[in-house]
Image (cartoon, rainbow, N blue to C red; front, top):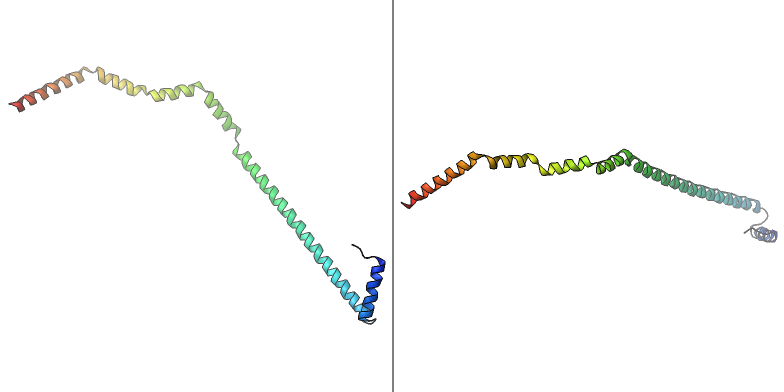
Length: 138
């Protein structure tokens, strides 16, 4: 998109005719300053866009690093190994089965059923009930 020599001569000739020889240097300086300021603004905009892209890339990398740190910190091989060993430990299974059986309660119930005083008390209660029933009938 460059300007060829013929196009440049044509532009200068038209400017010379329109503006005149006295004002042509002033207008050329003004056009040069305008082009320079436009190039400067364009450079600042492209630098700003590049800086924004770089900052966004850095922020993305920081976020990924944070996620990896979180994942690494939450992974504890000691806990994983302990959990696996506990699941393979037969003592743990036996203990849980014994806890579910609760032998103390079973023994207490057996002792209560074998106690002869309970039988005597039950017979006494039955006799007492029969006597009360007979009194009511009279």
